[in-house]
Length: 168
Ligand code: FES
Image (cartoon, rainbow, N blue to C red; front, top):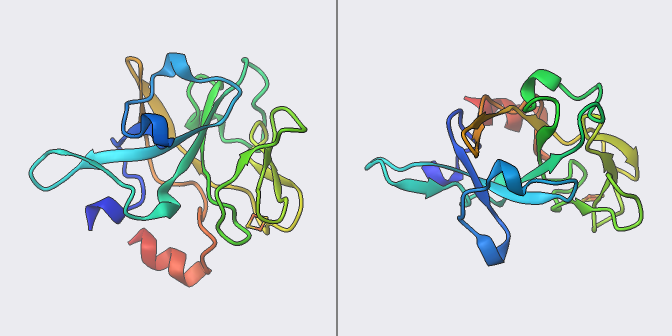
C-alpha cells in the first residue's frame, strides 16, 4: 500500500518527531542537528499520505555550512551542497540512528554504537554497520524539501535480493 512505499520522487518531507509529526519541514528550520522526516505523498484520492506504514521509511536531514559536505556524498543529490538526506535506518540491524552526543557532526546508532559521518556520505566511521546509510536525492521547492529520486544505495538492512524486489 502507498503508506508503506519507500520515498517517491515528488514526495514532500514532513517532521517525524512526535511533537511535530506531519508538519512540513521548512528549509529554514534545518541545522547541524539531525531532523527526522517522513516522506509524504498522495493517496488514490489525491489526499496527503505520510509514508509511515513502514518504519524503515524514516529519514535523517542535516544542513551544514557550505564546503563541509564532501565526497563520497553525492553533491548533486544535495541542496546547494548544504542540505543532505539519508535513510535513518542503521544498516547493521535496523535501528534508528541519532546524533552522536560526544562527536558533533556525526551520527551514532543507539543499538550497537555504529557511527556514521553525515558530511561524508554517511560512511561508517565506527562500530559494526556493514555499509553507509543510503543517501536520498532531494531538491528545494520554495521553503519545502522534495524527494528528487530514489535512494542511491540499498537503504535498509535488507539482503540484495530483498532490495531488488523492493525497487520494482
Ligand atoms: Fe545500529 Fe547495530 S543496529 S549498530
